[in-house]
Image (cartoon, rainbow, N blue to C red):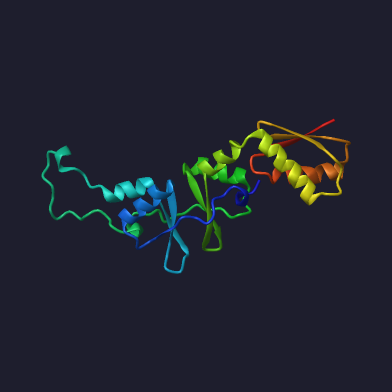
Length: 198
């Protein structure tokens, strides 16, 4: 399954010159945990997360310290560019979902910008992936049947069942047709494997 089949698009972005408080409202208002940061030409220049924004907005409470507050200390960052992460891990629309999951696990991040060149075309998050896996089996079954009918109308007839995201196709064996059916069934978001029952 490819990222384009599960990503959220268009992505909610913030500008690098946006005030931190404005970016906080954007993330909170859209119920997202991170947003790509773009420049004036809409090119990706960073990512800002909830944690970045929290760190950027709060300064230490002087009541928590026995030391006096230094009045010459720099104020907290006020623009997104001052607190964003500049080293961005991205994927493309044609990245395999398993590769995106490996990146999220390995880098300990919750979402990845989806890019075409330097342009952001979407965002894929853990929530997107969970939503895909939460789809009911009957809905997945209907979508597999529809994909087979639409894209392979003259192919063999399969009986389709889906259990826990695994599509089970039964019908007369035919190596070439089975391969095409596998590919088509896997395009349905939520189908994780395909099995042929004889």
